[in-house]
Length: 93
Image 1 (spheres, rainbow, N blue to C red):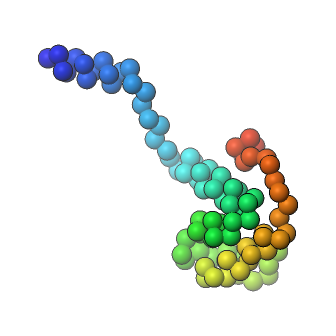
Image 2: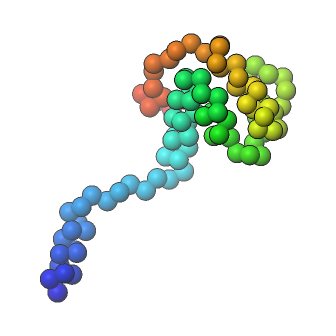
């Protein structure tokens, strides 16, 4: 009986860990993308795409249908991206 009472007390006192839903999962990916993009981490950006992703970049007329094509597109961030310090989490989406 004492163990049951202790378990009940602990379950009400200990904080319950938050369960991430689709919104939180999507925001996590956006944060990871922003961090990789801002640091010109091309492999970090590319790994966030699904293997069968279809991507149309904002400055490319070509539809990328392979991981290597997506990687080629993002190679430009190594030289074209100025350093950024703002955080996506500080913005209102």
